[in-house]
Each structure stands twice: as C-alpha cells, then as structure tokens.
Image 1 (cartoon, helix red, strand yellow):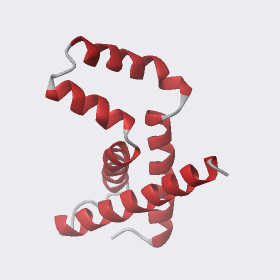
Image 2 (image 1 turned 30 degrees about the vertical axis):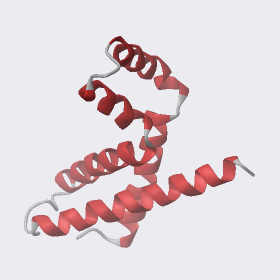
Image 3 (image 1 turned 90 degrees about the vertical axis):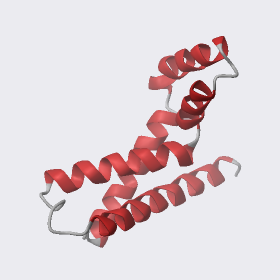
Length: 111
C-alpha cells in the first residue's frame, strides 16, 4: 500500500497532469484537432465520448491518476504482493485527492 507521502505526491502529479491535458495551452492544438474531428460526425457516440474525456477534469483526472499510480507501483516494485482491490482503493484515493485539488483551483478562478 502507498504511504501518505506517496499519496500526496501522486495526487499533485495527477492534478498537474489533468491540468496539462484539459487546460494548458501547450495541448491546445491536439484538443482543437479532436474537436474538429468530432464535429465532422457530431452524432458519433465514440467521438463525443473521447472529446468529453479530454475536456472533463474529472474524466481525465481519473485516467491520468490511474496511469500515474500504475507506473509508480510498477517502477517502485510495489505492484505485486498486494491484492488488486487495494490498488483499486489507492486509485480512488489518488484520483479523489487530485479532484479536490482541481476543485480548489477552479474555485480560486472566481475570486
């Protein structure tokens, strides 16, 4: 199981990764390309789901947090020896903490 320090580190990384995918200008061109691609067939469910995935901080945050956690567990050698359910709870914890950081950040934009 990951430690509280690892949880905090992964939550910060998840928050930043989510901001990168959803908001940062460095990825404006790919996001616009996906949007144009989706507009060619606006009623295509798969295309709409993909565009929603990359524009929603909660959707993107879930997958970014999961990817970061999986890489962390594999690199540190802590994937094996622990029930998969524990890793599922770790994923929920990392994604939840990253989502809280995103909510806090979004609330500051209005101030």
